[in-house]
Image 1 (spheres, one colour):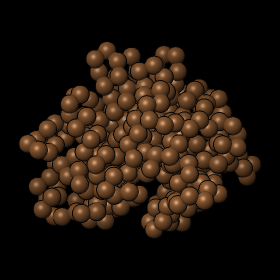
Image 2: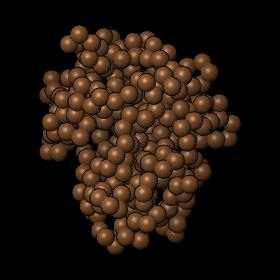
Image 3: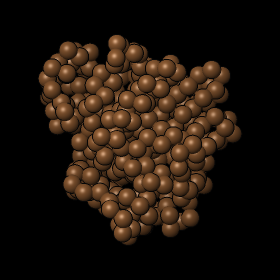
Image 4: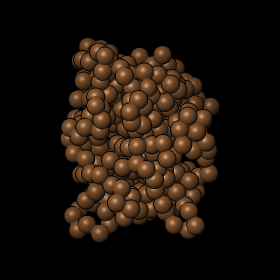
Length: 296
């Protein structure tokens, strides 16, 4: 699923990184073997590596080409970023821009960048290091960012912000990947039902971060839901009550996840999370009072 259509939109998957990340017992709060074991075989090897006991994950972005505009959804971890709180994504040297070019796009071709939320692995390629300065990577684009995340992450804002693991993991991220976009006059702050382009609408999905947003793509009777980190892994479709350890507001994240899965099932939508392996997408079916994924 590196290239597919949703209505009038052509979607290209742009990979940055793939590999084993963490054991499920670490990533999921509320994890139980009873909730995991019945599905473990289904998840291997595309979503779980039995040899290491770790989840298999991707950093990936999506170019949505409407024929009029080229929209880049989420920008991964980026190169040269110092990430002492999450060293697996620190000082990367990936061929992300080469993969973008192989899909047919140069940075200057991107008209709009949309970040589903402000976290270290979703804003990284907003900027790149040029002669010792963080400069916007997509120099012709406007960057659409969640309004509710600005006050939460801006270190100069006096409002209550992140603490604990969120603060540790995302340290330095705002300064090198968001503030330079604001300084360059490229930032546009979005709230619920923000229209990115015709048929492309952002919906507020708070919990993972205060400003987390889903991009709904609708047209020709088809719907795609780019959900960012509302769903990290297929296990959370079976177990919506399992948050990731990186969810900033746990109760709200669980409620949002159930609402998004219900919407995906009701609309027979293609679910496109940020980190899925396999086909990198899923369908969601109701299963009694819960849900189950269709991954192939």
